[in-house]
Length: 175
Image: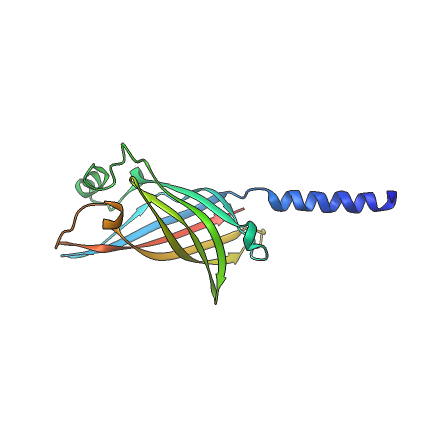
C-alpha cells in the first residue's frame, strides 16, 4: 500500500489542478448595428471573470463573465455619452453586462454555452455559440459571434433610424 501512496497523491493533485478556476487574461468585445447611414461599429472592454473550459469534461466547464457597460466606445463622443445614459445602457445604475452559463455542450464543429445574459435590469436565457482553440501554453482562446435584439434588454426604443439587431463578437484567452 505504501508504494501506491505517491500515485494516489499525484492523482489527487491532478484533480485539484483540474478543479481550479481559470481566469480570463485577455480578450476583446466588439459590436455592430446597422442604422440609417450605414453600420455603427464599436467596442467594449474585454470580458473579465471566471472561465472553466475543458473540452474533455464539458460538465465541469462554466463561464461567469462581465463586461463594463461604461466602456462603450464608437469614436463619437456625443453618441457614446448618449449610449451610456438612462435612455440606453444606464451605466450609472447598471454598470455591467453579465453572462453566467448553466450548460456547455458540443454542437457539430463548435460549442454552445447556455445561460443567463443580463443587460440593464433584464435577464434572459440565451445560447451562445463559440469556438475553442487550445493554445500552446495549455490555455484556450474562445471566440463567439452572436446576434441579440437590443429592445429585449431595454437598450433604447424602437426607432426607424436604428436597427434592433446587434451583432456581438467576443474573444477571451483563458488560463
